[in-house]
Each structure stands twice: as C-alpha cells, then as structure tokens.
Length: 557
Image 1 (cartoon, rainbow, N blue to C red):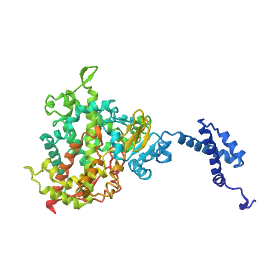
Image 2: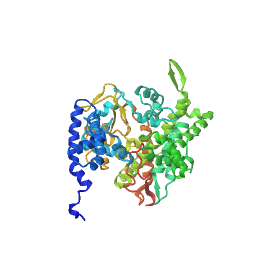
Image 3: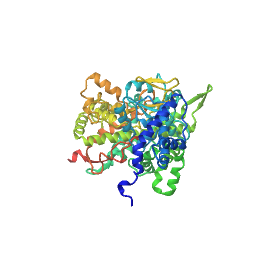
Image 4: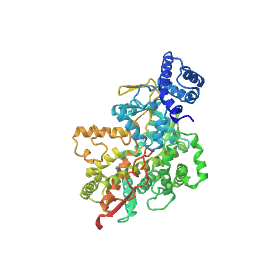
C-alpha cells in the first residue's frame, strides 16, 4: 500500500495551486485579443489543450476546470463591453441583474442599494442597464418637468383591464394629459375645503375607535387598511356606494388581507413575467392556501361590479365622485371629442383605490408604531391636541389639527423619512442622446431611479439618520429646515408626484388625533422590530403584515 504521504494531491489542491496561473494567462490573452476589437472564440477543447500544453494541469483536472474557465473568460468579456462598465458599483451588477434579484427575493432591495451608495458614491450601477442616484441635483433632472423622461417598462406591471391608468402611463406627455383629468379632484384646495370629505373622514375615525377595546391589543395595520379603503371608495363612488369594511366582516376585508400577502409573491413578476402568467393558477389548483394569488383579480372584479352598480344609480351623479367626473370627461382624437373608454375609466378607478388605501395604511401604521415606541411624543401630541377647540361631536377640525399640532406634523415627517410608502422603483429612461448626472455620463436607454432611502438617510442633512427624531423638524434653523424639506420626497418629485398627498395627510392626521385624544398605545408581545421591518415590496409593507398595539383609554387610567 502506498503511504498516505506519497498519495497524489487532491484535485482541490491542484486547482488551488494552478487556477490563478491559468486565469491570469487566459485573462492576458483575452485582453490582447479584445483590444483588437475581435470577439474571443474559445472552445472547451482549446482550454484543455492550453492548460495541458503549458504543463499546468493533468488532462483530467483540465477537463474539470474548462467550463469554469470559459465562464470566467465570458464574464471578463461582458465586463469589458458592459454599457455601464465605467460607473461605480458591484462588479456583478455590470453583467447580470441576478445580484439585484437576490435582494428582491429577500425583500431588502432598497437597503441593499442604500448600502451600495454608501460604498460606491452617489451614482451606482445596480444592474447591467440600471443606475441608482442619491443626490437631489440628479433627482431634479430625472423627475423634473423640464426634462420629461419616460417611465420604464416596470410600469407595464400595473396595467388594469389591459389599459394604462395615469400611474401606468410611460410617456410624459400622455401621462400629463391623463393626469389633468383627475388632478383637480385631488388638489388640496378641494380636499381641505370640501366639508363632505372631512365629515366622512371624521365619521370613519369614530368607527375606527369603536373597534378598539380598553387594554386589548388591536391590529392597527388591518384597521388603517380598511380605514383608507372605506374613504377612497366613498370618494370614488359616492356615499351610497362606498365600502364599510372597518365595522363589517365582508369580502373587502378578505381582499385587503390577500393583497398584502400578494406583495411578496409579486416581487417575482418583474423578474419572471412570462412564467408567472401560469404559476398562480397552478398553485391555486394545488392548495387553497394560495388563494391570495388571485387577490388582484378579486379586487378588479369587485371594482367592476361596484362601477356597474353606481352607474345604474341615477342619484349617484349628485355626489360627483371621481367615477362621475371621469364619465363626464372627454378625450380628443384627430380633432374629435369622444367620451373616455369604459375600461380606461375602470383602470383609473382601480388604480386610485389600490394606491390610496395602501399609502394611508402603511404610513398611519408606522406612525402609530413609532409613537407606541416613544410615549414622550404621544404625550406632546396629546397636549397640543387638548389645547385645540373641539367641535360639537368632540372632534377637532382638520384645519385646527393641521395648524395647531406641530409635534404631530414633525412625527409624521419623520415617519415619511424613515418609512416611505413606496417600492423605491420610480424608474425613468434616459432619453435620446444620453445625459450627464452629477458628473457621470449615462447612455440613452439607461434605466435610472433615485434611492429615496439614501436621500432620506443622508447623514449630513439628517444627523443620526437611522433614529426617530421628530425634533429635527422643530428646532432647526430656517435654512436647514428648507434643505430638509427639499430632500424629503416620500410622495415622489416633479410633475408625477403622487396625487393623493393631500388626502393622505388629512386621513392620517385626523385619525391619529382621534386615537391619541382617546387612548394611549403600548407595545404588544406579538409585534417586534423584526416583524415591523419594512420590505421593498411595491407598497413597502411591514414583514409581519400586522402591527398589534395595546390601547388603554385615557379616561380609565
């Protein structure tokens, strides 16, 4: 028997000893050949011949190594000819988007991109044709009204009934035309001065409070989701056709829960769109546990049914909700006015409902959760609210809350900063001729977006940026406050800023005012930092898709 000390070296030892030499020689030859602008053509046979001919490896080891070497050489070629090879970023991002896909699948895309910005700077290549920016200067160019960059193909995912709503419309001019149809409806001058809108929000706040029991834990994420849904459906369809999901166990509740569950599966849609046309139906056949995969279809069907019911009601036109406004609107084609397409109206209604409930729910939930973690700010807000005049029903008008509760405003801004209710994928396409952003040239066709997380956690503008510090909005000098306000963009920037900002502000402030005038909130054992970790899904949902807090009535303490 041959002694162990005389046995031939293991394949792994051979590879580790010689792989660098082979790689360097191949790299040298690849570089020499690509400098002449000739594509390298190497076969497995060539690699085996090369390595054995140089006496670097025996034939068997060379065969094992050949495919790996060819893969490495192909990566070198891809990196050399990558469109964005000169832009800082992870090496793999220059040649494949799988690096980014892994972060999508772990729901931490936004934080990963933020980490890359901290490592590589304000302009980062995050995929072979995709760049993220982290400066306000670049943001103004990308989203400003003077440059008018189109949206990326990512927005194809948000078509409804095979039609493009305002949100899903990619060309700037087409987007602006559609936006004009509904922008006046959502302007602060309408939302803040329409007594019917505020009256309904106040009524939903009172109904919200009735679902709370003293000393018991309540899921404020579920309640705020229903709260936002009830308000937007009332605005869209009118008071006789809006939902009442806060107090009633209904189909809408099931749909809202399933939409949140679907957030995690939908991350796959942008990566595998063709495959995922068929997978959901197959999974639903296998198990009823996958029923949530049809949540979007259920909401679309619910929306169509509600539209039909509202249209049949002759009295609904008097409420003049968004549906009625769209039905009275016209579009011009070839100089001829014509009514809006019924399916387009449906797509717009569906998108408005989806966006409004999701934004309100996520922001209100994180605000309540942050205040639950910080009783000092609960007390400050309650003190300010107690000093404001009460209406006959005991509520405070929105005008008074908006003007007379600076601590609530500061806490809300801090939640907007730390927990923006969006995916972060406000992607735009660099127009013809390319563009220079913050000193870096981007070729035409490059997909680019701003990292809202990076802007909101800029340590220069927001010291101790990871901390919840509402005082930064109260004690800053005027100049610094203006700088911070400019860099706070939870609703987007420029001509495509979220239309629902005014409505969301009214809903959240009135709800929080009603809640903390009546209750104090305390942490529950169920909800934790881990379960409240915000995910990089489209609606930026908390990982546990629930937020339980314990409520104690002020009068019973």
